[in-house]
Length: 227
Picture: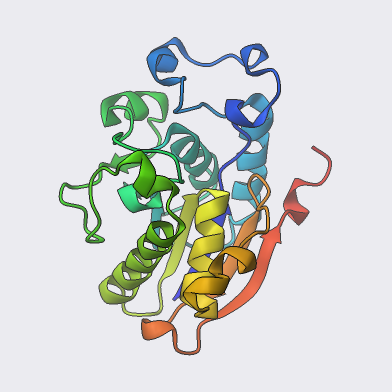
């Protein structure tokens, strides 16, 4: 299958002056950690959607984090058929723990043009529904989450699908190292130390067991020039 991994757009967490980037009153109580994307982030998501518009995605996934859902909304705006995003807890970025996202009712109110499917409990990837802070910062556990997502995709789909995933930079690095490079545990950290840019795109093919999987490009931001 073809998998496109996109890092979320610029969020209020990514700027030096978050108070100068307003957010909807609907999400005020969640903004302490579940950040909205900025106006620049909205442009980034829209440009990413324009770039990917010619790809007819079959399925879309992201974590329940607001910045991930908002980015996905900007991308799916340009899709003709794919207007449904499934939330997966295992796509959370590191440091998010004991939190399953803001209510889907609020997200659906903010983004009425897409169908947002909440993550089941227990999770379909086989992971836990919530993690301790130590687990969410543990690099070994992060790699395990990435491999669970990999196994989930290869077990669920037949191999010809086009899959869109929006997640965080650290997860993208771990997923690529896990699914493609098959690196030993002791070198995973060094090999995944690159910094994925906001709304960068990574494209790769994924086959069951990682056999013949390969990366086509990584951290591509050519569609964001000028902003």
